[in-house]
Length: 363
Image 1 (tube, rainbow, N blue to C red):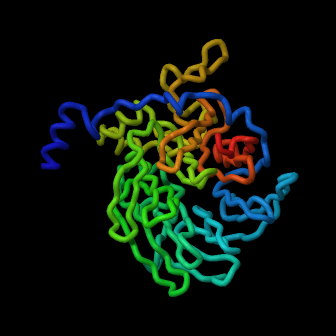
Image 2: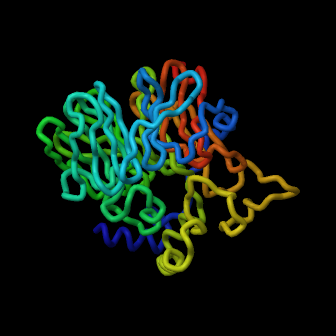
């Protein structure tokens, strides 16, 4: 029946075969809040933010850095052998996902413990981490087929090999809870045996039962590709996003012959695919609305890159959002964290960490 339904959807252009894109409206109404935010620190490739008493810990490529809360001055904590693709903090420990290798624990009672993804012990390409308790770590793997840094390729290849893992720090055992996900990119606790998972390529957030592995969509038909999930004030959550969806990209995803040639013949920087930044080269693909008129790019133009952070309530319902539109620069906001009343946002596209004051509090 599923095969028949997919065939009919392709013929009629509906369901997963539709190229329509939900609009940014309601709590997702566009604004310029991210472009107007203060600049906390300039960190090329800034990613994976974790708030600690000693400072803001972030990753930048293969480095883990700590930035002091006052001036944002950075010191290098660790230099890993491969890019850091995920991080989480808890009970004096820092869990670090190393792309292509697995997960390593730094500090605390389990300092030095490793989960070797290359040997099948846990995810090989971790995309997000979260402590379930003092001895248990949850991890997502975006894809078995592509490294965490190759998320654009994974999307354009239409892969569905992401997974959710439970890592036992005491025993060193790893168990896969759920598989077949379209780029599992974020995980967050709810205070019970149900957790949240961001499934980017299906544009939704899932509720997953850790005991049974059963999943239920709770936030669907998102107009953007969700990335990581961070805890927010009053038991709510922050969602960060790779970029917004684009109708032309949706069309290309359904044109297999064209898409195959694009992947094989065109350099990745110039694919018609979502990106963490854009406007860096005249060779990038554009649509008509992306062309500047009298030297001005319209904020509502179709765009490959975008900055978007959404605050959700405890039931994962959107409350409000912060944007950097097509004509902005704070794009590719894939990691956020709170400290006090301030929200820190890693704009990987701009290579900086933003600080939004007086937003991380109960409305």
